[in-house]
Image (cartoon, rainbow, N blue to C red; front, side, top):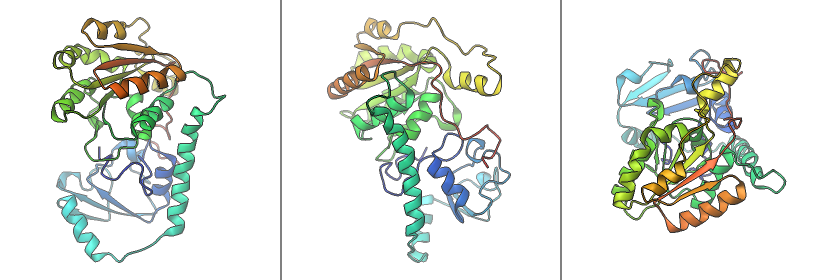
Length: 318
């Protein structure tokens, strides 16, 4: 939820931690000697279960809400207060330090992580679409300067991992609430509040069904909202978990005969596009992003395109 507080393209940014976090960020957490936790709740998706989390480090937590302190993880020290004011006070007391070797190693891990994704742009990697490629394509074309909203699921984590937000309050997601259908209304609100800005809502086909009727609102006010639908004909993240943990006992997660989102968008007066390959996606994305919204782009993905995960919920990665 704090993406953009420090630029995603910044030299010290390592990405998200936890189950869907980056290798660099999770390695830093495992090996560091001190964690300064600012306004976080240490959810299970982050800790993998509190036992053994950051066992080598001292943890200092800063939060306005006393109920969040020592709730999920026992910390060594805490401060109740406004993060901004507390950080000012910290900075005035801490001597300047330089951990050059550590920083270089963590940044190299970050670059390794990113190179794996960027390799999907190289010739010979195939032309089929995948979530990581689409997320990095959006990042590449916008340079992280669009206001981005997401719904909930694989697409949300692909964007959170690969879209390098450059400014605060420009990554709109429901976070731990897990609210399917959040993305389009959030994008509509952002468009009203930020006229002239590029607004992109990245959603899955399951989530898009929840509130796609609000395309009529986008059309009525001619809002500059671009909806990008990752359509894998499934509730992707739950389908992936049923594969990983339930021996492929898929239940109510497959959507083989959904509505035609392109025709629905065209029916309310919004241009609709369907892309199935990398070449088509880049061509349509660049064209639509240059013109601005409203538009709906449906990206056909295979249901086997899984989200990288560092381990099962409740288990700490060893």
